Length: 486
View 1 (cartoon, one colour):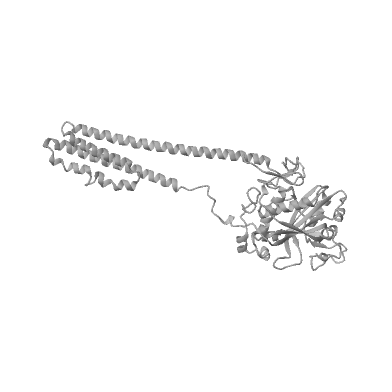
View 2 (cartoon, one colour; view 1 turned 90 degrees about the horizontal axis):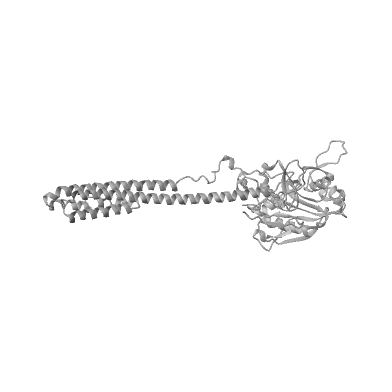
């Protein structure tokens, strides 16, 4: 059976390092829609299971133990079938070779008996030495015909066996030198022997022609296991952002995170206030944020296009009690546009809240994520002190470009920190009891780094030529077992 490796997360849970596929209660990846009727229940840290939707459960990750058993059983049966098929082919080949050898021996013996009958008919009249010479020539010719393996070689010896310069024709030309009573029976015996050799020659020729046709059929047959030729329905491409999103979901699902979503249009309270962002913060100004127009005379707080996916964290903390472990991917909007910034882009944020989580867990999660995402064994990271209103302490995440083949250069990929106590209070959680960490990074930037895309702006231009170059096949579903980008 296939061996599945497991690793222990800093929370004491077991996550499979291979052959794992995430199932989120809120959203499934675009190419895993077939599991939409299922949700996940976490029976225990060691035995996650899958249940039909409606039976409850709050887990975020499923280990397909039952599917793994089916897969192992199928693999074993498939391997056994292939072995049996191979042995059957070998047995057929052996039987075919034996059958051909037996048939060749039979027709050679048959022609030899016929020639012996011809010699026997002339034995009492023709001198023994003359008949012995005829028998020797006939036996040599039959042996030579039988040992030929190629049709081309057989055609090459025709003139030496039954042609005008053959040994048997030389004997026929010696008939006038025989006594008068020997000429008639020896001539008949010689002509019959020559006709017999011609018949053996044609028989062997037919055999070799059949073998040649059979070999061509075996070598030129169509292999139905080859991939189907690309047709119109297979010309579509998965956008690099969608691919990177699926890769990140696969990685974080292996760590026990679930996907949470929220609306793109948010209230000022969820987008700023509950995140401990003060009223005078520059991010709340119109030159940084898209505000929606309110009705004239309305005193309602203005709505905004969310500037980050952090409001999803607020909604999650308001809607459920710890422990919480989520990622929040989605579109965000800011008033910015240049080679590395666009008014709309994609983020993925993570949140963990419980009673014991600390910064060591944050470091482990980010290191494991970067190693899995860039598909390297080791990654060097640096955490620089920074400031975000919603975390304390706050840090910028830098990685050594060695993961991208450029060692010695540092590259910023996101921000992180421990959740600010004021944010916990704003969501009804006691900061004396609960603590946690949060992090965020840009999906578009991660796609640019991993796949060598130099400019962010073509991501959103709808250029088919660009998409065919950087896009992915619909069958390139990322998995930790099969490879994220293979």
